[in-house]
Image: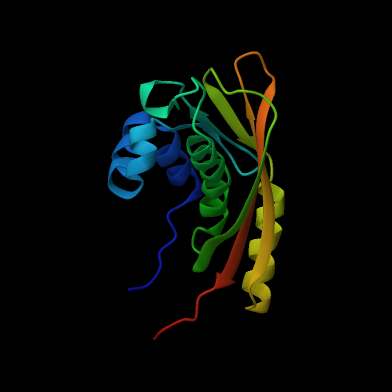
Length: 165
């Protein structure tokens, strides 16, 4: 089956429409569904994902589990990768994750990734050369006061798939 281009507007709508994303996450990302993650903003340059602070996401120390924060950070970078890879038949894989925590996460956290341009050039390089490329993307989590509570560097490996005829 040939890979078909979905279209930027359709992908953005699929991620940012609450009901569509809930259905998608229920089927394809069940832990993101259970955690209540939502993509609230997505364009070619940035992505914003909300991780709610609730019973399911809370640890015994009354802060948000680091794993929930990592999921939200990965989703904020992954949605940009997915958006830019549309129609290019690219294999995508997370190969590393580094994190720093600055403050206890005790409210809803907004994870923002501003690396759309960086992923676009990495995908272009992968398509042009046929070689695997590495792209390190940063997602920062901010609480309701606007303080940075955590920062994640997620490394993506991107490679153009071989065409099978």
